Image (cartoon, rainbow, N blue to C red; front, side, top):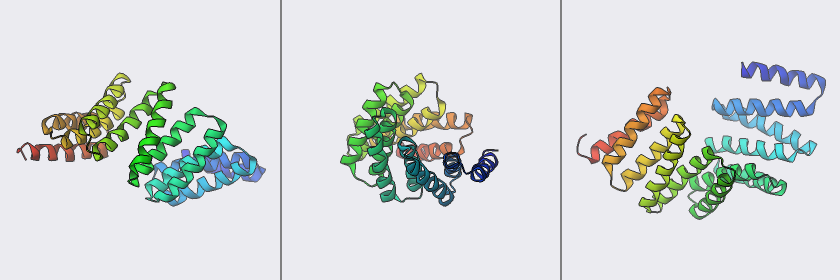
Length: 239
């Protein structure tokens, strides 16, 4: 499996004294541990990889791994650490003029600022990220940015904009036939519709999200959809 293969490869790289291969395996284990929410172990592996990449002058890999580590910090609610790491990664990506990683890191930084309730900075980062992803025709990331722009608009009381941005994300996901992305976009659409006072439309969004989540065996997303549907029913007087 992933862990066994990576751990064996890491041990072999250490035995051979290959620092570059050690960094790659640490990064791989960091990703795995992050997915498994083993956050302390993930951070350790990412930090080991970053140290080697910096030692070898591999700046692009440094930026990528700083981005991965920042998401570990985000999941651990270490928001200031995430912001700092992403700022370092962004400076590298911009220096290298790597548009994809600049946009990706800006997306993470925008999300971090949103969690910190720094709405102006979040809006700037997400807007810049969206422009680049659209220029790269990366529609999956475009939809992701739209999710959080919808959140920003909702928090700012710009409810029509919040609904429109979430609907745009739904439309992109449907165009791409990506059911998980569509289900996620429908969650944001339902939240925006509830905030706008349209509980009937929100109920439809949450019900569609629950169906897609069940089809994709996504239990947590389905649970969120059912919670949202319960709120919609309550607002409709049908609880």
